[in-house]
Length: 51
Image 1 (cartoon, helix red, strand yellow):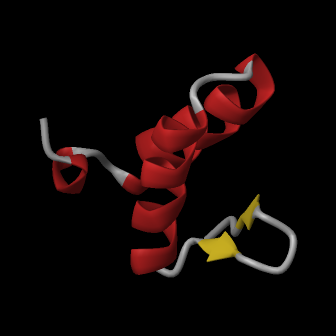
Image 2 (tube, helix red, strand yellow):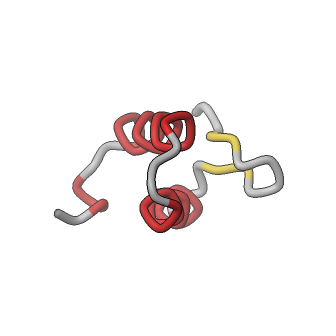
């Protein structure tokens, strides 16, 4: 599955839940990179930006 198919809301929620749930760091980084690509992440604080 491509992350490009996920809506911004779904991607943001997946990232937050992955961080809270202690999922694999590689998976969290994958989500984080896509959020950064979409300009949806404040990279200084690793916080999703609400549009």
